[in-house]
Amino acid sequence: MPLITQKDIAFAGKTAIIDPKGEYTYQQIIDASSLWAHRFLNGQSDLNGARIAFMVNPGFDYVAVQWGIWKAGGVAVPLCVTYPLASLAYVLEDTAAEQVVIDTVFESILLDYTSEKGLKSHLLSKPSTPLIASLPEVSSKRPALILYTSGTTSLPKGVVSSHANIDFQMESLIQAWEWNEGDRTICILPLHHIHGIINVVGCSLSVGGICEFLPKFSEEAVFDRLLSGELTVFMAVPTIYFKLIAYWDSFSEDQKQLVFQKLNAFRLMVSGSAALPVSVMEKWHVISGHWLLERYGMTEIGMAISNPFHGERKPGHVGIPLPGVQVRLMGDEEEIKEELVPGEIQIKGPNVFQSYWNKAKATEETFTEDAWFKTGDVAHLDQGYYKILGRSSVDIIKSGGYKLSALEIEEVIRQHPDVADCGVMGLADEEWGEIVAVVLVLKSEIEVKTLNAWIRERLPGYKVPRKYLIKEELPRNAMGKVTKNDLKAMF
Image 1: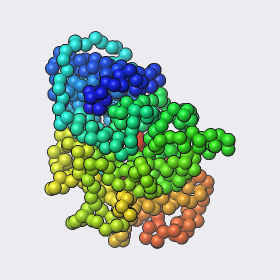
Image 2: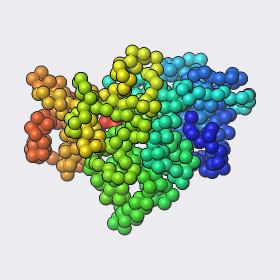
Image 3: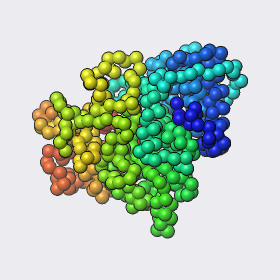
Image 4: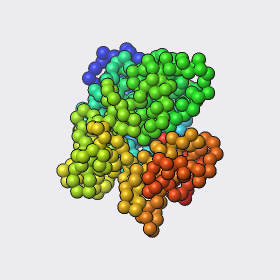
């Protein structure tokens, strides 16, 4: 459970959350979450791990509901607020959720379904006065949270994390990134994903900081808050930085100077959830004076690797292991310790999840015999820093005996002045095993033949794409990560 709720009431009267409805103190979160806990219990002494799903907009109500579930001994199942009913139903049925909290704006999407299935529904539009009783003692080893994987290679799996997992994940980031009670951040990330839940909301509220929420993302609204002089920490995914850079391009020179002054005063700026193009990192440095802190994590492990808060942040690299987290690279048969030799990232530590929900075989298969979690991501070491080469299933292309990194090829193609973005993947081929293909988003027209020649001047022939498609945008998931299987389908 967030560290602040049980261990420290020194911040009780301090502002904790600012959302479109108002400002709220820590004491208000504590009180509201306790009421929710009693509402979920409804006279019971302990939910004993019952799954409670909730479809609630980011803000005070989201945090109060989530903490209330934990206080009552339940397992929180946050639902994505942009998912269609079929995707929501999959999560509800897979977790066998017993109760569902529904925000007013989502009643039309979910209420008929929950009524039909006989699920107990709690509506934010209809507050109730619950029976007040004592709350249970909840062990840190008990399950706290089920988040679902993106399901890019199979049906989404529910990732079960314990309270101890969550506490460790936050504590390691608080230590590494020096979170403190003077910090003020803004959450513009979806809260069915580890990045927003742990890195932004969890860490800021665990130290007594302030977390703001916007009613809706827009470049103008984000820049208004960034230029307010009130924020100290900003976290986003590469897609958001890309949009903010495009918006900044429309500013006058005087405005750009003001932006630099305001952004340069931030304590910390972070990028994650997808590979950060070096070109975006370099452009943001021009805009803000900050080298974005890139890190590596996933639903199953929270964060595991990070560039240092103090010290060099290497473009294209995700850094070094976080405090208390063990990392190794494994080849086909043994651990890889040489620099620049690719291997699978494997993780061990208190941050690693408990299991996949109701999937014992999948859980067993994702751990080695000596209890290391197999991430499926490939990296190599470069002067002590890990560099992600891609997801073994979609970003590592096996062509003519070579193992190629799609991310490396993308980085080169993005350097062309007429290319706005691109997605590289491998397509099945009888002769080569796979051939390199690319989907392009262009700033201005360019002939494929001309671009191909330009790439050949910068990459060896076996890395140069053989097939090209031009589209207006790339397909992405809720966290802004390009969905490579959708790209493949375009061919």
